[in-house]
Length: 257
Length: 314
Image (tube, rainbow over all chains, first blue to last red; front, side):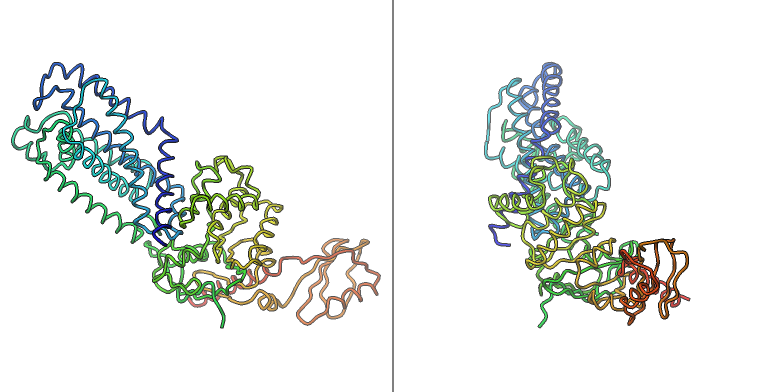
């Protein structure tokens, strides 16, 4: 295939993916928005007013970056895992597998779909947060970079989950038992400075901590982790997961018989 | 020099559970052919087509599509193939038109051109009125036609059809036969698997029969049919007959008082039967084959193969 044909194949997958989550916006865009509004009201307004300041900011201001990041993570992951598994389950994945579309384009198309949903939900949640607090952007470049990298990383994770899933139950196990706990323990609601030394060190094994803190740095200018190091960790995860995804696609594991 | 659309050489496939689906099959399909790949359920037909269309990983062997080796030039080979699988495998929530347009996109066809081709194909296959409906709302026959439209949108030179008429009513099946014959005449090579043997007999020029992972027959349809030693015809009689007339050299049997079964062996002339029946005052109004000729041969070949294999295992 020529590079123009590859571009068309890529855009076909991207268009399909974006149309899919826009068509079912009541399931894909609305629920995270409602959940986040509840977080803002309960944790930010009701409980946050009693907590006072954290990291030199109102508690509401402190948790907003983490909550935006949480919605980006869960939606990027959820979009790819559900879409790719449905495609596999219905057999329509074969449409792509019999075509000359290269494997990396298939992966890039699905990841872009995940990123698009992650960004869409992230933008909605950011807009909603404006009703509850005032955010001042500290470093716009870092914000964009971290959101993009995080959504790419979790889209790749969703892809791997979908490849190995054999039932619809399998696509909710990782988000429920791995992703949600890691997100909650990733410094969304607190600074790891508050933790005892052991737990503060243990938290550094949690990759989500790096994303939340790097993003928080972009908005508030404060972070528990050095931003450069955080970006390095996220990049390493992206490279690792991308390589594994390509291995799965090239060998046909979980995809071809 | 013969140009082959498909060359399979010593193809083996053993699944992870240890089941050997293909035991080193080799076959060739000429360019422009209408080729039947027949076999009983579980014989290895779908596995063969799955490996050719790269949906199933082979264990061993080589495959060339119009000379392009799947191991070395997979992308080129894929561009030349269109696949209609046995199971419905499109996104049931997509609109009919989108299913075809998206497939064109996977082959790198620009959207404007894809829309033009989709319109043409959906019109040819009688689906244009349904273009904006979700594909899940289509009837079984329409879904089959949608899969054919999808497989043809990139204008493949080789079309692989895995039981395309399964569960389709006879009227629709015939219109699909006409459509397939037309595209074959226009130069598309077609490989067909089917359980309707009259379909294979009337459409295909060459045939391979696969059983238990082996090709047990690979020849032209004409040569295969020639090997049928006895054909049984059923004659519809003008008036009831009480007793079977004696005709030297032919085996006759009354099915009921107005239907007579006549066995004709190779070398015998059916005109001779008519002449002798006429002499005996028996008038025939119409006739038909008792069973489809290919079906007769198919059953014989598969049964013999089973017997041979049982002999080997003993």
